[in-house]
Length: 466
Image (spheres, rainbow, N blue to C red):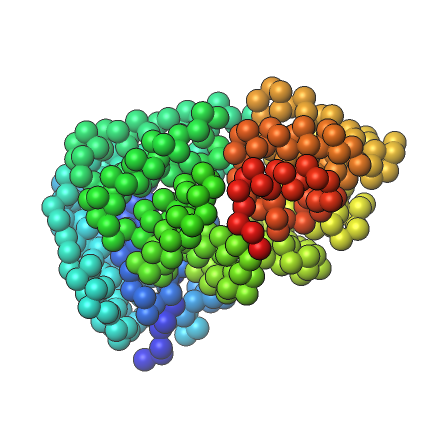
C-alpha cells in the first residue's frame, strides 16, 4: 500500500434531498477534519482550503496536486429525523485507488462518536501511529445535546456566510445581519447546553472578526474562550483564538504562550501556525517565522502567510510571484490584486500598481475608487492616481465603508504629506486596527519610518524591541 502521510477531507455531499440540511453536511465535514487533525503524525489540510472544492468538478489527481496531499477522503451525509448516515472512502491521489471505505449510521446524538470511529479507522488503515494522548482524545466522547449541536451548526453556517462576503462594497448591513444570526444561534445552543465548548469558541471568533460591527467585543470574546477552556483545556483552537485576542490587545508575551500551546495541542491547526509566524516576526525571530509560514502553507495552501513573509523581508519580486500565482489559480479574489498593488508599488512598478489596484477596487465593488485611480492616473500619473484615491476613500470612510485608516496613512506617505498621514495613523491607533502590531516590520510604511512620530506610535503600541 502506498504511504499516506497527508490528506484532505473534501466537502461531504448532502444526500438528504433538503437544501436546508446543507449546514449539517458542512458541519460534518468540519467535524471529520477536526478529528483527523488531532493526529500529529498526519498532515490534514484545513477547511479553508477544501471548501472551495464543494460542488465543483475537478479530477482527483488535479485536486491532489493543488492541495499537495497523498490522499483524499470523500463521502456523503444523509440526515433524516434522529438518524444520520455517513459513508466515507479514502482514495490514494496519485493512483486514484481506493484504500478504505466505510459506512456508519447512528442516532444524531452519537454523531461525534461516529466521526471518531471514522478517524480511528483511517488511522488504522494507513498505519499512522497515535500518541497515548491522541488515543485518549479520540476515545473521549461525551453525550451531546442534539438541539445544542443543531443550533451550533446553524450558527457556523451564518458565520461562514458573513465571512465569505469579505470586504466588498455595500455588504456591511447584510454582513452584520449574518453575524448577528450566527450569534443568535450560538446563544440558542448555549441555552440548550451551557457546557458545549465549541459554541463558546465560535462566538469568540465572530466577535473578533474585523468585519464584525465596529463596537469591539474583545472582553466578551475573551470571556467566551476562557469558558470553553474551563470546560475542555485541550481545545487547540481555543488557545489559538485566545492568543489572537491577546495579540489584538497588544499583550505580546501572553499571545506567544497561547500560540505555542495551540500548536502543541493541535499541530495541524493552520491558523495557529499563521498566528505564531506573525508573532515571531514582530518579536524579531525571522527564521522561525519563516518556518511557521511554510508549515501554514502546507496545512492551508489557500493561506498567504508565506507571501507576507517575503513581503516583510523586502523580497518584493518573490511576493509578486506569489500574488500572480494567486490570481492565476483564482485564489483570494480581488484581494490578490489589492495585495499585488502593494508589491508593485514597493518595487517601484507604479503603472502596474495602479492597474492592480483598479482591478481590486472593481472586484470589491468600490467603483468610485477604481474610477478615481483611472481618472487621477490619466491626469497626473502615479501621484495623481494616489491623490484621487485618497480623496475618494476619505469620503467612503466617513460613510462607514470598510476603509482602513492606515491605508490612507500609507497613501499620504507616498505623497509626502506626512501630517495627513499621521492624522490617519492616529485613527488606526484609536481603532486598534489589525495592522498596528506590524509597524516595525511592514514595508508599507517605510516612507514614514524616519519621522519621530512613527517611533512614538511604535512606543504607544508597546511593540517588543527587536
